[in-house]
Length: 507
Image 1: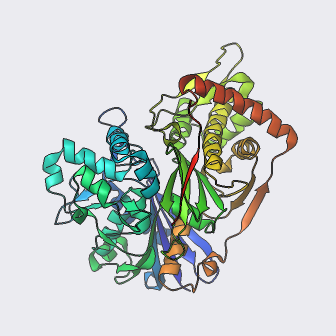
Image 2: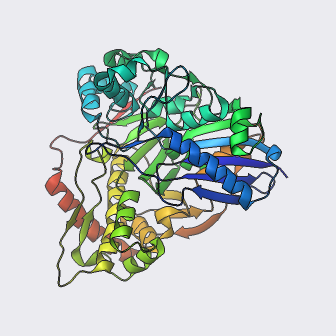
Image 3: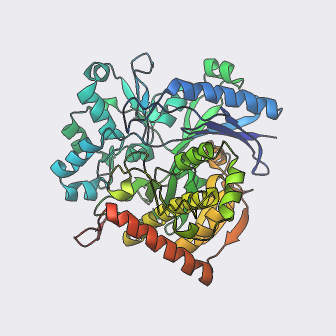
């Protein structure tokens, strides 16, 4: 019996899953730590984590996995990594981390990206980068250059979070084209490094790691790493991808028109496109998808909402550290629309769907004589769904067809109320599958290591466990609640006075 091992490097925890190659089924899965990892905010709208902590939890999770399922580590045919996107890790020539990682929800670099968007020109950025430089990794690196010059001078290579974990496994400093695109280091039109943006920021391309294929043997487990993990030296590391491209891969979302969603730490809807389209206001973003090739390019169009997991986690603590299942039961006791109580689920950094505005969370319509815990629990779930639907509307404006959505049976999609609100607000069919990010990374490792002859073979064992469709009555109720939510949002964020449009470019 042979296995594949997948790691999911999140900002809350590290998950490790072991997949049986013969059956395509997960045989063991663990999460470490049990309590969510801390995010440090030295200033408002900053968010940092120590990469060394990610590695320690990878070690802990692997040891727990071995304890949970007695397997021979020599039988692991490949290791895959998925990771929180857009983070910035800096290492020196000895491979030592120079400062805490600036992670995905940190907003300190917004002004640098907005200025670059103006100075380089919106037409140039959207035609070549398919995005505003915004708050992405390149802009975070510019912030370090301007504000921490002593640290910047010591940088040997920059890394994304998954690149750092791969480095700890293999001692190889590498990244992928998909990874470069998520940092806005990639020029889609030229199919090359975005040299113009680097020159504008005064950043040397020499700081970027070697580029390897997403599905490939990118290195082998070193003896030192193998000792720490209790695994076998020489095991190939054969896949890495950001969390949202990987979530799509885990659901077999690989072709134009296919859509994936997730609602964990962040809320995301991610659709595949084979044309170079961009939103004129960069409220949704395009990245190179995992199965893209120069001959057959495929991009993932992503809408992201930061205030998903953090709102759910915050509310759980406010309600007395009850379980998420108990929260779902509370939400089910309130009617659709929560009797007029409306939650704007922002307040966790710059929101791309709001053109990088940094709003505070708001609870509107609270009546002390009418509303209780059940209404707050329901309004929170509906608020997250409505924010996702707001992004879906933008994706549709950008030419992405959103009719059927696939998701893993995990995180907020475990909530019947959340699923019902999502389906009826967006007017989509929802399919839930028996998978998660770590399992997707394991399947990707099988493709990269040559265990599977094609990506289609990798999805043996992937099963649809639920299909949910909108109903006319519920759709009307949710659309009414969504319209109220939009009206409150647009009191804070006015509708644009210029027409919305889609920019299309030829490859």
